[in-house]
Length: 356
Image 1 (tube, rainbow, N blue to C red):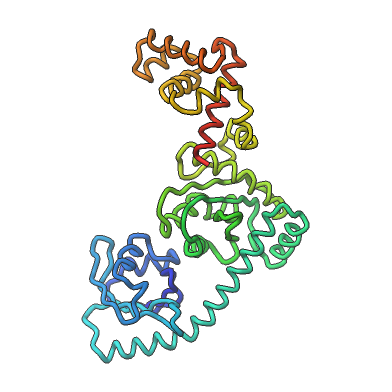
Image 2: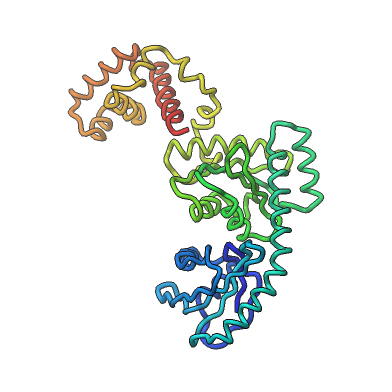
């Protein structure tokens, strides 16, 4: 027998007689069901079931046949009771299992209420800690220190960009580490988490947790490590910069420590694009995509005509023609280092604006 919460994290289990079920073992050792098992189990409709669900074996993931007894109380789903089905269970056995599920519901109701209160409290604390109000941040840091949250130092902030509810993702994320080793919540509409910089949780784990519950592209930014909770706002600011870089580069996770020019580019105000010279804005505003690609490739190759032509599959004569057209439209001289710098910054700002 195994009892899981609604996110398939084991809460209680008995010893198993006979050959071990690989999924059951992995769930107990990893404190959460493997992703392949979650997909298989939820695919059988257990999220909405009110009656026992018989689930056939899935040999491809090492899962034996089992019966799922939903644990429901007052219309609220609290978890699942699982029985490995070595032989088909009879009506009397299912009746006993339902009775056990009803008893478990009484216990889980109290635990669910406590979890809900804990989530609400963590949401309030992380919002205060990462707010620009220094008084509120200091007060939140003091509360967390007194409650022995995040005992490992240094710390860093992870920020995500995704569409959809994130509470289930936070639960999966927290399940990978001991209690109070992660502080999670939504800050300014974005999922955010504070974790130990060298602990088991980080950007990849937050991305994986989000990927399991939301659709669409996911981007994560990791801030720089800081030594104290009261410095978390700094790591958060840098995590937001890394998040912009992740979207710009179309990668899942970007880290502040790995950013180069993006450190400065993401700090510029949104009005920076409108402050560019008229000619450059005209080049970037549309209708010149081929020239923009040529300019970006040319600058990324440090003005090396041979490498640029090879990258774009162009004859050098064609490349020189395009570069002259760029200079005419943008009003720049690409032989001047200052103009090349201006164009490169403009291109990066334009990409950041489009990916925001």
